[in-house]
Length: 125
Image (cartoon, rainbow, N blue to C red; front, side, top):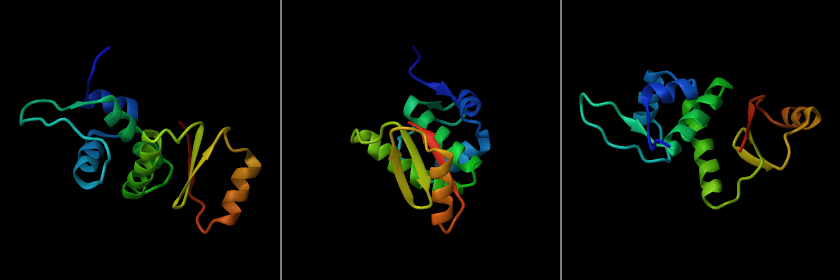
């Protein structure tokens, strides 16, 4: 099993463009550490880098700004490090909810009605 993937592979698995990945690495407070590279040499990404970038990309596609997505992913990664996040993770505005099962349509409607924002996203952890 390979230890690193290339930026092209990261782009393919995350759905983020190469430009987005580069911008996010420079501008966002990403939690995982990125391997250093030198000019003219392709950057390698770890599995942790790929998971973080893919989750940010998924939240951005669902309507979150990149900064808001990175903040929520950071919370989730901290929970995983402490062994707290299992099952489904629901991001609602500034809240992160952990569920054993995916939210039902009724739960999603209830969340939508109780929030000032319609924006929420769910990831299977």
